[in-house]
Length: 153
Image 1 (cartoon, rainbow, N blue to C red):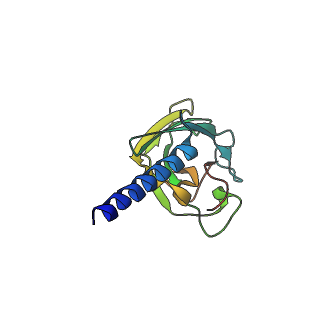
Image 2: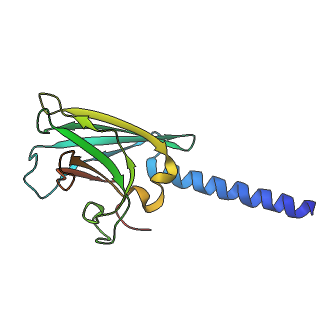
Image 3: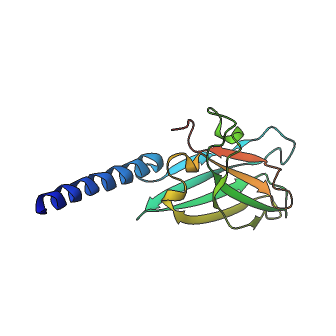
C-alpha cells in the first residue's frame, strides 16, 4: 500500500509539473505580448493596441493598452476559446468567452487601458485562443482582435 501511495504521489507531481510547464510555455517566463489587429469592418479604423499577459501562482494577469478607439465610447473585452468556425484564424472562430475584462471607456483621445486577473485554467489550452474588444453598446461590433494561440490543440 505504501508503495502505491509513493507511485501515486510521483505521478501527481509529474502531472502538476507538466501542467505548470504548459502554462509558462503559453505565456513565456516574463509574460507574453500580443498585438491587436484590426478586424475587417469600418469600426474604429485606426484602433490598435497590445495585451501583456503574465502568470503567477496559477493566475493570469492581462493588461490591454489600446489607441485609436472612438473617443468617450464604452467598450468590453474578453478572452475567447477557439470556436468551430476556424482552425487557422482564432479571431474568426467565433468561440465562447472564457474570461472577461471589466468594461471601460476610451478617453477623449481614444486611448484606454484595462486589466483582468483570473484563474489560468480559464485560458489554458484552447480556452484562451484570442482576445477581442467589442462595443459595449453592440457586442457584435469587434474593431480589434489579438490572436493568442494560432492553432487548435
